[in-house]
Image (cartoon, rainbow, N blue to C red; front, side):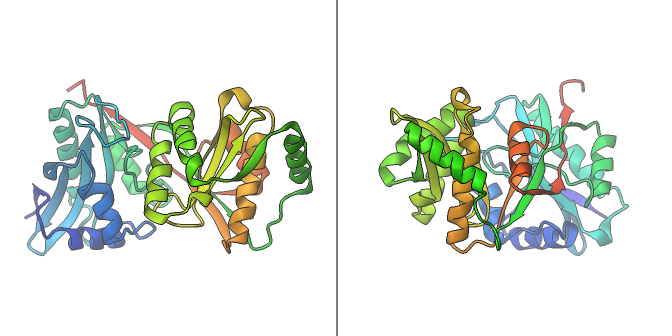
Length: 319
């Protein structure tokens, strides 16, 4: 007999083991699980729903509602998110996954959420969404329960073992330098500017990503900044910002009013050159739109699509 309950102290090891068994392409460490779930400002033990039978936990799902302040990263108070979940392969086809998601949606509805996303939770996400190629049963389950795909971001990778800045980009860099634009590693006294720029002009959570990265790893030089001829911050790129993984590229962006000058292309390649000099053998990231200007820029630079995700949403107001 399988029953559902909220998280209890002592569950952590079992839930980490479940991710390894149930989603073998995406296992998580004890530390990563704790940081993204147990230490999140919006964590509620009743939202970390665990399926238990006579052998112990056999499945779980994490639901989080945006009803509190999630630290310095804003979240939509009308929103709810399912950030991770799985069922052990030996316990599947017994309706456990369906019951877990139904319980999670009821939790979010009772918490005041108007909708639920899988996953894309800004303060702490494991993956952008569901990888339907690796987990087709998961997609079918969510669609049966009323989820619909909002968009499909992609992950990309680029090998750096033989990387060199293209001659055309070297020429473009020289042109922009001659005009007074500067590109280079940030110093500590650049950080207030770049954090404010990233949060105000690009994405609300990017300034905090930079702050947390430097606080944890002490590497302001892993933030590459671009200033215009008047010294105004107009773009940045970084790497090693998430979990300290030096080969993970991003976030990255250019001020909307300065786009069209090739600053993003230069920033991207200056950063890749720096990563290669530091010994990185690849650059990768989890999230971009394949048909966006950024996605095309990455493809032009030699990145290849490695995974496609479904960001899904269920409406919670109709029941």
